[in-house]
Image (cartoon, helix red, strand yellow):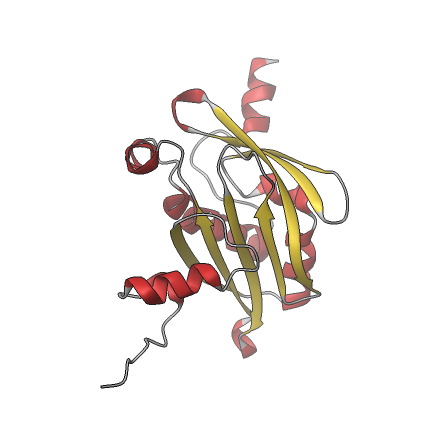
Length: 191
């Protein structure tokens, strides 16, 4: 009997082998946990790609990203909020980039959270652009660390969904809707 492979995105696969295929499809896979999220944004693909490819702008909608320092065309340094008031850092290396279509990366050796992934931008006709994020990572502390990250709402699967929603809000309305103070508002309040 022939093996039938699911045609769904690898991060949704029920089979362990199909999920492994998804991780291996990354240019330089790092990490055993595979997540993927997709959102349709009513903006042109080129506009979304241009915003995302300027890594210094990513903290405007990636909630846990404190800063991204662009070191070169293919290398950046990330500082990310972790559970219990801690931060994690790593250098990311762009491994593949197709203008208007995709950005793939992998973390450099010595990363606090080894990770790799890709962001893809596909036309959705009159509806705008489909933006898909696929991320593989090794949670600090293994499965216990993953549970702790979930408790603190810092687990990448939770964050990916929220971050793509914020990206959609920012691109479609020009702002990220929130019921709480932004960092800028808190700083102004303290001044």
